[in-house]
Length: 450
Picture 1 (cartoon, one colour):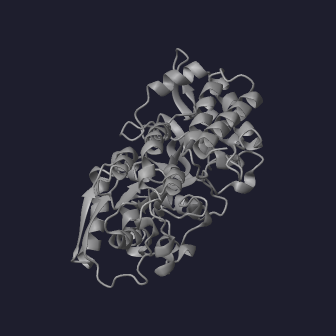
Picture 2 (tube, one colour):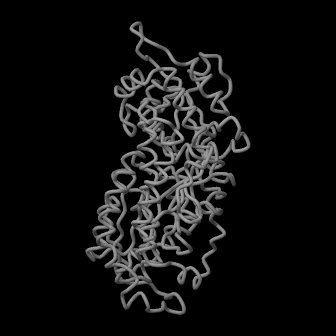
Picture 3 (cartoon, helix red, strand yellow):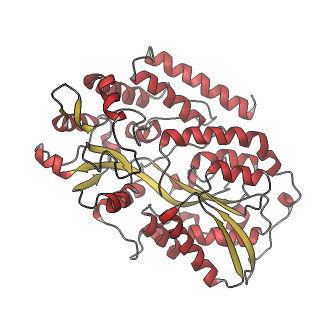
């Protein structure tokens, strides 16, 4: 899937959740339909019309449509009205206004806490229990980001997993034979591949340490040092988690070694992440953090690029975590005001649990499947570069960000501080992190009550 860059995704989610907090209550559990039990058995014949909203566009929308067409072909009495290019804000507004959304597919797991707690999406557990859907097909991490406080209101629809991309030609020129496994090794290797122009400006970077560059985000870095976000009571655990201090100290020193202003100028001149001008694809950056979907972009935009993939290096004192990383993904659910929930469920179940459908989506979108059967399917197309991410997804230490009633708000607050800190404006780190704890805890209390 073409993932919205992290910083923009946080801002979009925050805006959406502000709208949702005012309007989604209308879709909550207070309706008569919410108390109506589902049929004891699934219908033997499917018929009727449902509306399906998703965010994909262009080539990727065609992949989605091909799977929709397969479902319709298997059920001639069914019609699916597809609305492509619908981001989370559009979907949430459509649900809250009762505009006929039956099934919605979102790019952001950050909305799960809000959608489950407000009832904007149906609780799927009764359908899952009735139809004996095998949730053991999902890893514990995938289960965790598709439910909130025991309420399963979404199902996973492929995943994004983050690792290291490295330019093999630049490695060979620098005499580097294997990708780094620790952050210290990452910087040492990157220094060998960083070059400068005659005026001292950066010509090429071994690695760009700037937070906010492409997929450099707090969420993606956290698993490298086993850093914690929230405790069991939804309170911020950031200042008490030594992993964050370790990661921020390492990253700030890296930035300072090169020079913040110098990195700013270099980064400002790089191509956009999801275009052919991507800095890694252009050889301007030798190593990059990115998701499995980058393999599809390289195939399309830079097919001659000599590159490899590997797990991202871990903090030096967490080498036991090497081989794992950060995982997130698309989630899909049934709108609370769906007029045909049985058909919506049948479609959602097909989209997210049918092995053929999941594999077809994975092959077309170049995302990681989220079911065990799809991951081991002989029909799954996996180049050596893509296989790295399949292995990362299967690693038991691979983790994600926890669901919260404030969506991605806690991540945004922390990352905003990290951006100031790397610029030398964050003050004392320990004090700064405690202030972020308070900011997050205040927002959670505002959303949930004391």
